[in-house]
Amino acid sequence: MRLLLIIAVVIGLAACTAPSRDFRGLPAQRITVEGSVFDVRIRGERAEAVRVNTQYAPRFGPIRGRAGRAMAQASGCEVKEVLGDQAQAVGVLDCD
Image (cartoon, rainbow, N blue to C red; front, side, top):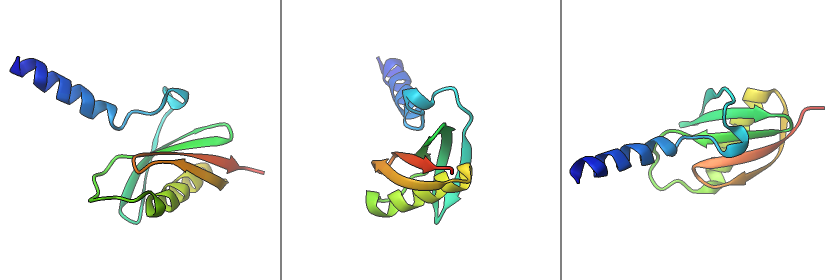
């Protein structure tokens, strides 16, 4: 029983930094912005930033700006909009 609990915890923790379905299989760029570390993946006009470091009581307001800057740095494009939460954010890119 204890072994099953350990396996479940390990699998659960591994899923915390996994990309969403739309970004699965794409290479990630690890980018740090003001102490927040993100794995950023780009697909067309969208980007996903998954925060991979621990932070005490993060609020999405400050994280949203950092995630947007990480997406801009990874893509070289302007980020028009960022939606999501403290752990995972998706941005709309303007690459024109």
